[in-house]
Length: 427
Ligand SMILES: Cc1cc2nc3c(=O)[nH]c(=O)nc-3n(C[C@H](O)[C@H](O)[C@H](O)COP(=O)(O)OP(=O)(O)OC[C@H]3O[C@@H](n4cnc5c(N)ncnc54)[C@H](O)[C@@H]3O)c2cc1C
Image 1: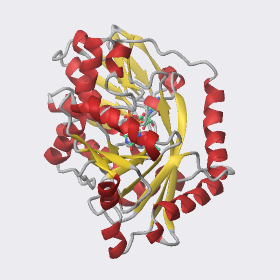
Image 2: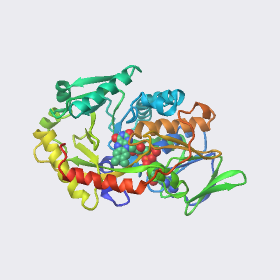
Image 3: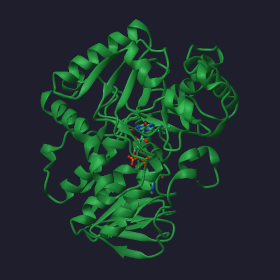
Image 4: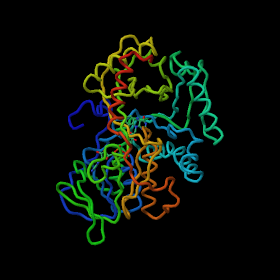
């Protein structure tokens, strides 16, 4: 995308084309203008258009340019935060409401994919959170207990069953979450865009919003060549936010995360490694993730940016790790490599922002945005339609607040990942 093979890597190679979305080059009026063409913005656009609302979506670059086109493709239920910590952090009412929304969000993703016939390599066989050592297993036991008491379909697997499913003895066990699964993330974003256009939404790419204000009682957002006036503005710019809502980006600490995709594996390897295609990640602090795509490529990722010295260090580490986790792989050949930035909030929970009357947005999904972005996008649409009052939203409105030493923390994450991977951290 934008001629950078390290921005969207494999996903750009294998995703179907997006719908035409011409640059905004006119002055127009709409009921709602949405800023940002990722999951949050596209889901909001789709649900508003389906309700007959006149909606314009403005995307600075291309559909899925932000996290939506670069991620691992794990459709998660919930966040990193333990379920019992939600009510502790947000109070019992918001806490349980948010857990409900996040727990059910993967089902919404499946429903939309099926309803709109989105070709995005959806796999519904769950995810495996993999325990590294006894400490990892202890964490998963607690996570399983907390989800199970809420009736979630999660099962703790021992090392034997984990080995059978993944094809490695590297893990002490794993937590199978049957709500979750995998998809091709850019194909999903582009599919949502097609569905939104079909429902009547008007999409514009190459149309960065550079200013926002009000005129004659209406909201006005301006791009280099055009302008939209509307009754509502939905801000769905998250970690890649530029322009008037830079504060959304500055509220987060960005964690770089890279992925490498092997060439398609042969039949024997595909029978031994993830034959059911669960999506996986582990319990380490500098975590690793892996999953199969539909063609049998193993997509392996971890914390780090593929730039400067990072490129060689992380790739060499990934080869070593893959050899240790999956000795049966032998020498691996990578066919694509890419990285992006994950927006982390200080309490690892998302945010609801009201930037002014009728200017609203959700953000800060902490590397868990496929299902939450889709669900929050629909919620924004329902709020605008008057179906969900502000008091029923699962988060209180908060002001974007820049964390102390943000730039330093980001530099530390990038350099720290290089040091850990160079020093030969075990997996
Ligand atoms: C490497 C990586 C791995 C990840 N892995 C996973 C995973 O496995 N599972 C998971 O659930 N989540 C994962 N995530 C997180 C997930 O991708 C994000 O949470 C999700 O994309 C957020 O969706 P969004 O629509 O809110 O924002 P985005 O997808 O980031 O979209 C925001 C869009 O807004 C646009 N924009 C910004 N400013 C402007 C402006 N001024 N005018 C117009 N447009 C603007 C951007 O160009 C961008 O396209 C990962 C993220 C990364 C980077």
